[in-house]
Image 1 (cartoon, chains in turn blue, brown):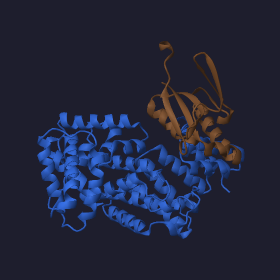
Image 2: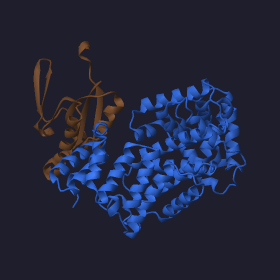
Image 3: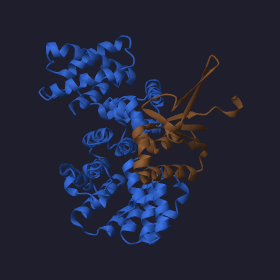
Image 4: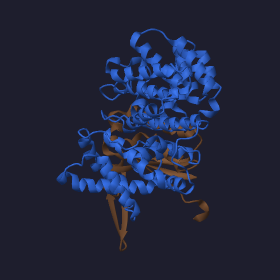
Length: 392
Length: 117
């Protein structure tokens, strides 16, 4: 974690005045490569961040060591990570919040904001980001280069926005973090923790810590923590998909659940409910329902109603239909699904929830057809097998 | 834009056609069914197993005929679909849903527009 902390802090400091993120990344990569060459023999300097900053600033004036930015940085970051634990905390200012505001500026194409943030603040390489967002690596690299050029040339300032702008700009940061978490949600290979989900959690902690004035920041953190806590229980021993109502909650990360509940409570103290606080409260209820066996479907549907009032989305609507089905109101669930059918022909969860509702109504053949359609739309083999097998 | 989704499968994946036909065909037919229902399919075909292939070359006028696919590679051609979608991102989304993409791979290539041929 410490190396990740350093990367974003240093890029933010290096790019603050020039607004040239690409040049800052190149200079930092060069400094990290030098660190890797010198530190093993000479020892790690007393303040590694200051050392890197000095070397990188010297580099900034020189030509650019293009490409290989993150590739060169990886081993040096690992080394820094290992050594960092023993060195005192840096006294350099933390400008990462400004960097987050820059990456999610309205002048940057919305779909590039999350990738740009992952690269500039965390040092992820374009290929890995491209894979998570399912676009080609060259297209992602080009989009990132264009976005950085735009920041440099359009004069987007490295500042924390004025009071009036601040709420909307923080919302853009949260949207980007949530998009990154969504892209990481399906990465469940083997036992390895999902990389992008961990990165998104890191960013959510960063924003909740640096901008505690907006309770939605803690709400987003709570949402990610409460979902992330269930990760170990989402697959069985043979890799099969396990739906939430059958998960073994002893496998959940209890510390993440506790941290998530605490963040949610802290957010609620502001008395300003919002989209992410509601979504976190929904996940909290789901967890409690599984833990206690109590039927919490009525309050769950109530929370979904409020969520749809303030932030209507297909995802929330489909989730509400699932809650209705679980509460024994399958006809209402089907009616709600039918109302958005035209927009959902390729939406896997819509078909999966429809299958559940149809099965609850006893229409097994229509349920199987809907489940089959959902199976054809998922890219997750475990989910596909679950949908094709049907609920036992 | 029209794209070809070219499906490459491993020998282990091909073997599942015999060992667990229900899961194997269930996955492929659900996938192809979803593409059909989405109205994007423009053509394509699944191929019989690689050992059924016969490969022909003519070198200096002489016919060389071999049993099996043209190259002995880790991944072999399993089939192809032609789809009409907005852009590469949309084509990649459909490629990601292919049952073979986890063990094997899917190559996504734009087709040559008819007016260029």
